[in-house]
Structure formats: C-alpha cells, structure tokens
Length: 383
Image 1 (cartoon, rainbow, N blue to C red):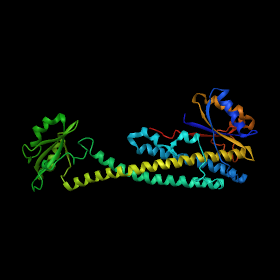
Image 2 (cartoon, rainbow, N blue to C red):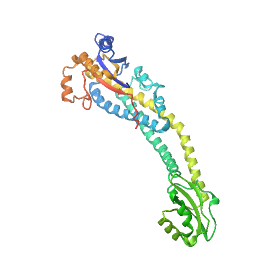
Image 3 (cartoon, rainbow, N blue to C red):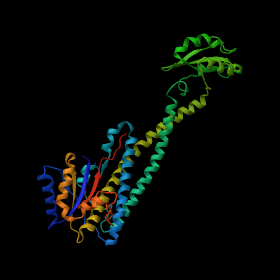
Image 4 (cartoon, one colour):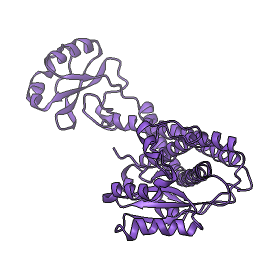
C-alpha cells in the first residue's frame, strides 16, 4: 500500500501516552491494522487565530496545487523515459531515498523552510518554489515535445506504405534519367497482384513510353515501386491511364540537395533529442524530489494548523503516520473513531450534514473527530 493517513490527536498527560494508546488500538488489540510511525513536526510559530483560520484554507489550495505539480513531473518523467517505464519508479526519489522511506522518516528541512519564519511566510516560500518548478516544466516539456514531434513526423514519413512514405532513402541516382530535355523517369506503385498487368501494359499506357525501361526498385508487403522512362510531353496522359489501371504514380523529383537536407535534418533532430535527454531526466529527478519534499512539508503545516485550531493552545498534540493494511481499512477507521470520538461529539453529525465550519476546511473532504490528511504515493497513471 502506498497510501498513508497522517493524523493527529491531542497529547494526554504526555504526547507519548497519545502515541502508546493509538499503537495499542491499531496494532495490539486489533492485529496490525496499520504500520505506524511518529511524524515529527517542529515547534512552529503559531501566530494569531485569525491568521490560522485564513491559512487553513490557503494551505488546502496549496496542497492540491503542489500535488498536481508532483504528479505532472512524475508523469512527464514516465513519458520521457519511453521504453524504460519500469525504471521510472527508481528515479522518483525524495532526498535520495524512496518515497515511503522519506515519509516514514520525515524530518523538517530547517535550511529550506526556517521555522523562525511565520507559517504564512513558510507557505509562501513553498508556493513560489513549486510555481517556479511548474513554469520550468512547461517550458522544458514544450521544447522537448516539439523536438520529439518533429522527429516522429520525419520517421513516419520514412515508414508506412509505398503510397505515402518518403522515397528518398529507397531510390538511387542511377534509377533516373536526369538532365534530359525530353525524357523523364516516373515512379509508380503497383500492387503485387498486378505485377503481370504492369509488365504487359506499361509501354502502352501512353504513346511515348521508352520500351523495356521499367525496373522494380523496392517492395513492401503489398506493393512494388517501379521506375519507367517516358517523354515529358506524355506525362499527363500516362498518369491518367495509370490511374485507370490501379497503378499509382508518385510525384517525385530526384533532387540530391533536398534529399541530403532531409537526411541532415533527421540526424540533427535525433542528435538534439539525445543531447537533451540526459539533462532533462536529471532536471526531472531533482525537481521531482524538490516538489515532493515541499508537498510533505505542506502536509506537516496543515496538521500543525488544524491541530492548533481544533485542540487549542498551548500546542500539545501528537502527529502520527499510519500506513493502513489494505484489507482492514474500514476496521481501522472504526477503531480510530472509537478512540477519538470524545474529541468532537458532533463529528458524526458533521459527517452526515457536511457542514462547513470556518477555518476547518471540511467541505470537499471527509471529516473525522481527529485531524486527518491522506498522502497517496501512487503518483503514476500508466495508460
């Protein structure tokens, strides 16, 4: 299970007692409903009640935004790694460790988010940082996707049916009569089942076809590409008659300069893509880690703010991280409800009525008598 429940309950005589009680209820009395860890939140600056109430709403929005950026970076990493998607997970690290390890051993980053600052300032630092990552991602993704798109278009041109694909890499200079005032070489796609018809009729499709001038240059599954030489003035007549006989004349002029330019363009795009790939993956790894760390710090801020709003001052609560056992999630909810229902006698009513209590941000979210936030580490949506 990559889902965690980050909860808090008020300290009894000590916070350790709160922790012990929860451990007994979820692991001893009820056969391992969850794996639990203490979640360390430092002594943050409380500020005034008004500020906390406003901050509660802002943090909810920031939480959603940062989660969306974390998922975008992870998903784009999967897109960029194309064939090695199974490797994506091992590149999605936070501070150099896997996400579950990071969350279960969470330590507040004092250097990035100094706790001497107000809660509002810390949330603004995170907001600016993650907005920057989001903007950079858009710019980098756009540049790389353009490059990839152009390369795919060229590759598509060089694949597919003889009726539509580029012929530049199939034909050679010696297949054509070049620099002649009167003669021209045409390229014709003939279905395999019609080869015999072609050999019988091509000389008579127009008046001025050079006898025995056809050669089979290339075959795919369904058709062959034949060359044929004729007088320039017979081109239109020849095309018309060919179409009637289910032979397709391709519009193709042999132009060495153009063909060389196309080849060079493909090589350039391919080289550019390879050049950008390494730095892009490195950027994604670093910024995934930054965004994920920021996201878990927001969860910590939300638990702190919500716990103070619910349980009052002085600050006295224990934050706990539960990793539910998938089979027993419903049972775990019941056990936690029984354990904490005394904290809020109206919790059951609130669940029914979905009331909106200012500052507690209960709309759009489940409400329990204890502070609760979900952290889901399953960030990839493989199609």
